[in-house]
Image 1 (cartoon, helix red, strand yellow):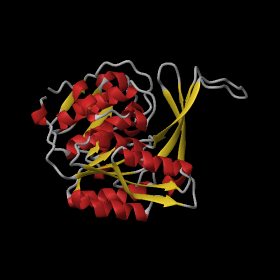
Image 2 (cartoon, one colour):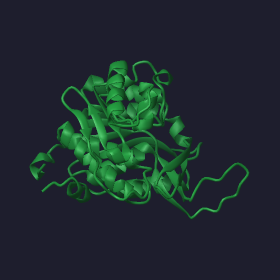
Image 3 (cartoon, one colour):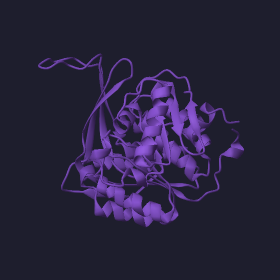
Image 4 (cartoon, one colour):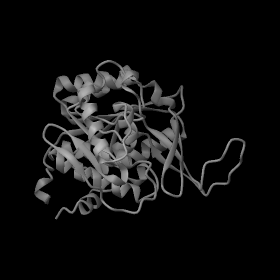
Length: 322
C-alpha cells in the first residue's frame, strides 16, 4: 500500500448507532473467588461502549474532511457529561446523542488479568432506552453517510430499523455482533441487513454453532455463517492469530501485526471503527482490513478503551504505508 491507496477526498460521514459507557477498569492478578476479598492492582476510568469506542477510533483515524457522527443515549450525570466532552474533543460529532434525565449513563466494569485478557460486566443504563428517537436520527443522517456501524449493546429493534433504511439507501452496514448472541436471539432479518459482519472467535462460535481453535475451523465457521445468515462478508477477528475473511471478492487468512499486548479489551472496536472509516474514505476491502488490523494491534499495546484508540499517523506507520 502507498499513500495513493488512501482516498481522502470523500466528504461522506461515518455513522455510528449504539452504546456509550463509562468503563471502570480494574487490573488484577486474578478474579476473586466466591466469598473472598482480593486486593487488585489498579483502578482507572475510560470512555467505553462498543459504539463509543468505534466512534473515537474512526475520528482519530479520519481525515479532517470526514465527519464521524455518533447516535446514542447517556444519562444526565457526571459520567454522561464527561463522555460527551471527551468524545467531542476527539472529533466525534455528538449532536445525535440524547441526554436522558431519567436514567443513569451506562457503565462497564472491566477486569484485566496479567496476560491482558479482559472480563467485562456491563450495566447498560441509558443505552437500553435507545429506540425510535435514535433510529430516526440515524435514518435522517444516511443521505450523507459512507457507512453505518452498529453493534448489539442497544435494543436490536432500534438498530434493525436503521439497518433496513441503510439498505434502502445503498449505505453499507458493518455489524459487530457483540455481545455474542445466537441467531435465534435476534429479530428476523437482522443479520441479512448487515453487509459486513465482524465477530471475534467467541461471537463467531455462537453464530456458527461450532468451536473455533485454528484457521481451518475459522474458515469453516465463516462459511457456515455466510450460508446461514446471508451476510455478504464475514471477517472473524482472531486476536493474536490475525483475521479470516470470507467474501465473494476476498477470502483467506491475514496474519497479525506483532505487538506486546497490555489489554485486549477494545481491540475489536479499534478494528471496526477504522474499518468503517477506511471504507468511507474509499479504500477497498483488503486495504481497509489491513488498516483496521493495524489499529487493533496498536490498541492492545495501550491501556484504556476510548483512550487507547490510535491516531491516523500511527495506523499508517504500523500498516507500512509509505
